[in-house]
Structures are given as C-alpha cells and as structure tokens.
Image 1: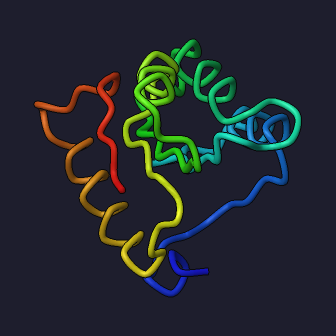
Image 2 (image 1 turned 90 degrees about the horizontal axis):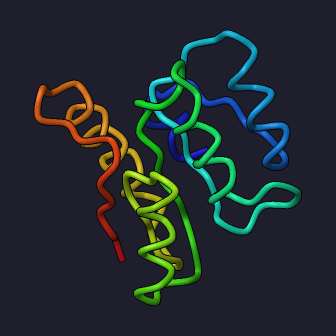
Image 3 (image 1 turned 90 degrees about the vertical axis):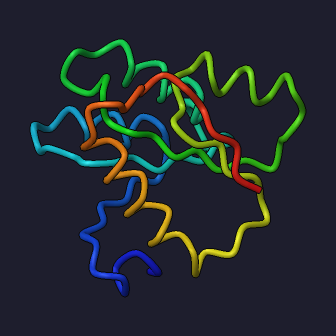
Length: 119
C-alpha cells in the first residue's frame, strides 16, 4: 500500500512459489521485496533462485526479516539480497529506500551481490 501511494506499480504474491511464477511470467521487474519467512519457499530460497536465473540475477532484492544475527545477515548475503531490512520497520520510509536502491542499481558501481542491513 505504501509503495502504491508513493507512485510505484506493485505486484503481489502470496508465497515463494507464486513469487517465482510471477517473475517467470515474462514481465520485467525493477526490484523484488521478499520476506524471509514466507510460506512454501522462503525468501532466502526465492532470492537464490533469482540469482541463479540470468534473466533475474541483477534485480535488486530487498528482504524483510525479524532475524538479525550475524548468521542471518551472512545467510542473506549468500542468498544474494541487496538489503536486509529488520522488523519492525517504518514502512512510511520504504518508498525512499526503493528509490535509492533503484538509483544505485542504475549506476555503474552497482554490485548486486553485496548486502546492506537496515534496521
């Protein structure tokens, strides 16, 4: 809802498998937002699938989680998340984070396989 109010076009999936099906349907996506603890395939597995597919490997991935240990951050990095956002998070600032991530992804210095932790 916040992203739509901020002018972004949003597609939703109810679980990891639905997210992968939506991404495989041929539509181009600029950014993906996942929750680590989704039903079916979790956010980490979906992120790994995105990074393994040449068509989606460079799409920035924002991942929400209630987990924030060093091991959790390392798991997100290994899965290929761009940002790991710890809950609770003020969703009112999500639009700005999305804009910054898209600008960063458009720059030549973008490294899709590094992870930033946002608390």
